[in-house]
Length: 470
Image (tube, rainbow, N blue to C red; front, side, top):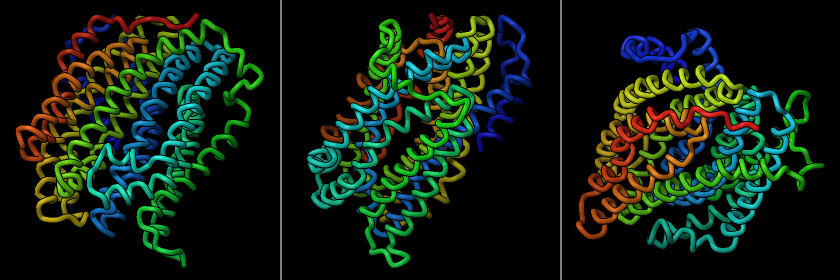
């Protein structure tokens, strides 16, 4: 799908943005070749990860609606963990892309060390929380006793996978920025395939295995994560791969630590604002009844699947722009950013069309009550509009702006659009004004579309056009 979107973007971007001024002439064939080379494997990796959630939802949806809903709510814990992990791996990718463009491998090894420290500590904290207080964690997302019980049993098993995830994500992040993106995609895809196959066996009790339902989904996730970290270690041992410098694990240059946290802290602020905000949306919908929570769970899976293309292009945008800026080619980096901004709108409208096209198949593909099915149809229509903002903001903010080190803007924009507008509206509608679940869901989608003009204004200030290397 991403390949088709890039082809359409190549045609549409040239047609609709002929008047866009660029500082230097871009070789379109080279640009799209590099974009495809990086974006396609990352989009595939994102797709495969989203397919785990889709497989859980579809398989557990075939077992019982409450099983699907409980696991969907429980996995929000990993979603929050990923917000911390992504801030560290994101900072590593921003600096790593520029130092890779500069050709400084020793600094890349030090960056790897910093990521391992940060992600290791975060993973231990989330593991302990899932093992010792899972019921407390589930209370944030639901007040139904059965949902809490099923979700807690899931977290006690899945918590072991959260312990491993942080380390493997560091390896995958380094692979993305050092021209081993296909290896990273292969590792993630292999783990996902194993996860889905084991889901089938454990959830439904095949091949002589007891029927485990939600616990089976957790066990499949844990085993697949073990396979993933083993593959990461095996491939990274090969020649040409960047590995942690364990002899310098406690001796990273102070200036690099400062540079790392100068990127990491704003990313963490933005990630937590977005992640906790998104988790709040799920919690709000979870308190509006089982039918609303079930419909929202399915809609979230479809959203994550469709967003794979913009996630891949957004990550590729940060790498491509960062490589040029780190190599000192600021004019070319700026021109690439302008081109990627144009592409983001094309990707957004294509994603809208995809959501509308798959709606009939999704609605009839899972077992839902009539009320939940009605909610799901409405949520899909609302989501189709939301996708425009989501794609534009992902490619421009998480791609171009972050690639140049302009990481503070993401946090500012989320504080205003999500925490000062969308969340208060959703809370008021759900708990005080007693709006319908669809009206509340629309409130949770208003932030991405509403901040597009602000993002464009920030982009055209060109504060992101900077070399971060020393």
